[in-house]
Length: 294
Image 1: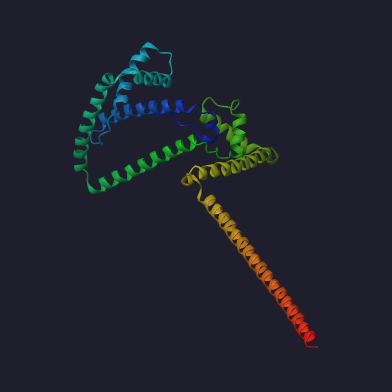
Image 2: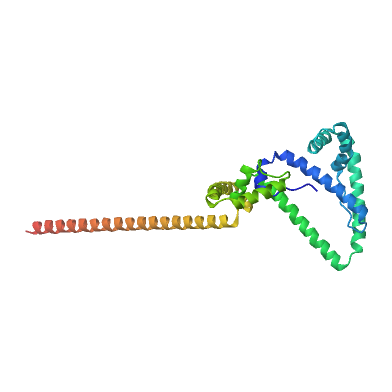
């Protein structure tokens, strides 16, 4: 299996394009398949392995040929070259590989049923647990790739991660693990005021992450991907929305009351004016009648 570097936050900055990851994934899958074939030869009682699809069968056929023709090419570049060849094949040229894959899948179903029939209840339960674990792992990998493609900000680095990234090249040791071990020892021997520099940088990186995550989560809400937003952020957003709605309702209610009061005041004032005017007219009429009688 390929060695997986520790401290992924540091090494994530050196990752190349998504296409390189894609070809590396295919190369890793091919390597795992070869390893599983070796396991089958030594453990005949093991579960049958899933067959390769048409494309991976083509890769298995072409890889040794291209390796002999171009021994100087890296493994990832070989897989990239094979993928390009596969895309140029016509449906008729792809058919033999795809038909072989179909036959292998049918045989796999038969072998799987035969294997499951000989399992004890405890073994069947263990198989189910292992399958759930593999499924969960695949889902986690797919989700991580999706988040990367959506531009999710990188998590903040710790003070030690920052120290390691600055001194990795000149670190003692011939291998990656040896370098990390020596760096860890150097970190432990630093004085407090020396570590404080990296601690401040780590705090700044936390602020960067917080601001970038807020912008990213706002964007996820805008495009309808609230499922990718943290529950804490959704809770804060809902509370803020609730306060805003309550404030809007109170403001609207206050305005309505003010309008109603103003209208009532206006009506009352008009009625008073009408009453005063009516009394004045009545007084004038009374005075006019008195004058005539005299």
